[in-house]
Image (cartoon, rainbow, N blue to C red):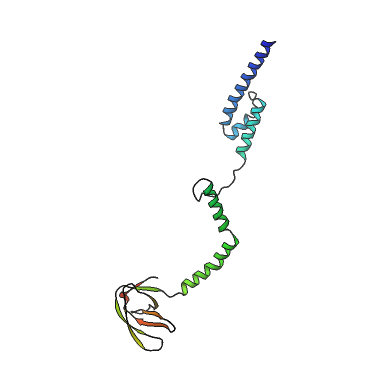
Length: 177
């Protein structure tokens, strides 16, 4: 009796080993081929279930992922999640929708600026009509009022009055925009 039980146990181990080999072979096959081997007689019920689950997992469409924005790991995932939440928040969308056009209009309506390339004596006409001569150092930033003529008109802010205007030669200015 013991010998028969030992032979049965050895036969079960041999069947399990053959089934494990067949399962390993089937798992390496593409999905359409795996379907053909689902009811193969060499597979034990547990290995058939394992093959069926593997096949189901391979046929389920994968979750769409966002492209990587940063390094791998927990901090990269947290930073990416934070950036997406902030970028798509109603406040940020409102800032872009309202702030974008406002910044564009502000940029277009701001007078251009220039820097003096060389030191020079400039005759400014003040808002009251009097004329003053000022020596402007190299690198002084001025506001350009009219650059359409041969010599642009620049302005310096006079506190409590307004801009004092002067005409300077174009080569003495380096325009910013």
